[in-house]
Length: 111
Length: 241
Image (spheres, each protein chain N blue to C red):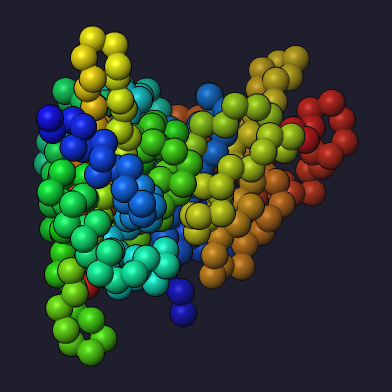
């Protein structure tokens, strides 16, 4: 039952914190440091959240020591759980306006 | 030496010590009817007519025809001609709010900005622009990103901002801190009509005259009387404060 699956993912320790922190693109290492999540757990949570489209791989950025780092950003603004008819989970995705502006801004700061 | 963009508004450039800092964003605040949109039209029209600078006019408030009529009503007879020639690019309410799809309009706009053909931009109004964001934090973040994008594309921008109550009792909104300049348009009713004033409260990198000056809205748009600072508004019943 995908809905319950989704709720389980969200309910996992750290998952909501990761979503909260990924308003702007963040790397696994940053999230691990900031939220004090063991790095292996952090990767696991990121995988789970990405699988459920709650989080997305935003970019591969170049680090200071010239390595590629994956940065993630949340894909949802709101998640609503409805118990009325049958259990349903409604996700409101990030607005496209913010995505468009983020994109343009990022291009320009790289330029 | 800071480069300046002249508004071409009589008297205003004097107060600004020459003009608005190039590639900056200035917030124009005031009550409805204070002359914000007129200042915007004038800034764009003067840019084309007198300084050979093309402009973009974004309006969430009006459609192209309303804008044209407003421009013609203050004597900008060639407004429509310049729109047709492409010297003035208009994104009106109908385009910006088409099928609730502001994001594709934004894409078009970003393409236009990339062109580097335009040097001036007016956004009427910031109040409406901010409705596209979910909370205050997002509004601030994206206002900063948007002004960055404009600045990097060499646009000198005026954004109008609706102000509910009479200055200065009103809270000063955060957007006033986020932009490079702040111009307030004030109006106060009198027995014979309305007294109007302009106050340039802030202009980064510029040494400005921060007194409050009287202004009029006439054929040709706003006219500011920079030599009338002695004219005291602090006494008498007509005080805007």
